[in-house]
Image (cartoon, rainbow, N blue to C red):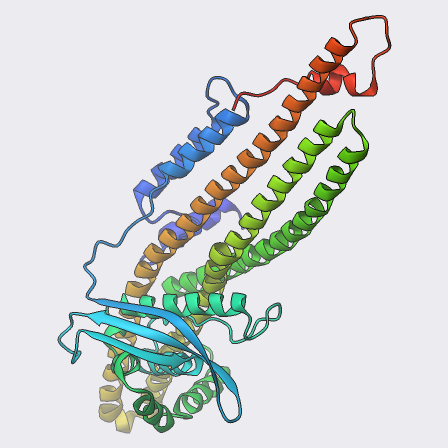
Length: 446
């Protein structure tokens, strides 16, 4: 399908509009035009310095939306501890809650929770609010990292903190009874709630799946078809971002290892070559600085970029499940409508049931629309901030490397001047280190 046809089709649809093809606000469109125009301008002087200044100005021109709503519930996950039980070893996290809501008995709580407690909470929220977007939990295992490694536990703790804060900021989920129990109940009280509800969610999920496989929706709204297509494309794009970032990280690790091994080699070489020892020593110092900068960038990417990209990959999967549940509700409505048409003698009874299911469908539609708008705001803020911070780090990274190499060039030029002083006779052949193509390289003002 041509791009014009796709755009025309979206404009003819009422309700949800695909954010992949059009901005949600006029301000975003103006901002994108400004970014394109800004990137095409070349300030006087040119060169790396002006490019770096342009990049910094571009990053500073992007403003991340902030939530102006006053918060009355603050949740923090920190201070993990390792425990050894009778049969296993597990990690608990401290969950601290501060609130001014009247539904809580106190204004501050501090409890310890295991990962399986977070899983229970998400299951309860999914059961109570099937048509709301429930934030995703981090993956239980990681192929690259050990279960109890510091890096894996840091990533999990950050993800769990994000999970609870997204729930606390939600206008509906934050008032859920199970969420309040999770934040305030003692360990033995929470265990009692968990055992009581065990197995219920899995049985309900199996029933819905079996029914969905034997029935196909006839009148699915184009609005939710577009929404499902967008979520699917978004998940694919974020999965690509996650895979590419992992590959870049692996290549950066290899690059870091290479330049770390080169630096000592040049340092040893400078001890045996007295004529060019200062040049070789300068190169070794440059390589050490580049290796340290690369190491810092790798750590920052794993701590800040990777968790957010992975979270939104999981978020897309969670949103797909919510859309399937919405379809299941509509499927039940359509099946009831068919039954009503077949059984004229039971029409009055089925009509009442039809009205109830129709109301549930409308509530599900309203929930999805409200959550989609809210989720887009959060997504724009998080992803925009993610790439802005990444661009600033990369700019600083290349400036640092450029500065290190400029020191090498200054050393080379200084060596040439010393050679001219030591060998005033212009008829003598030039040494290998006096190659004008090497020593007369112009130094760029930083």
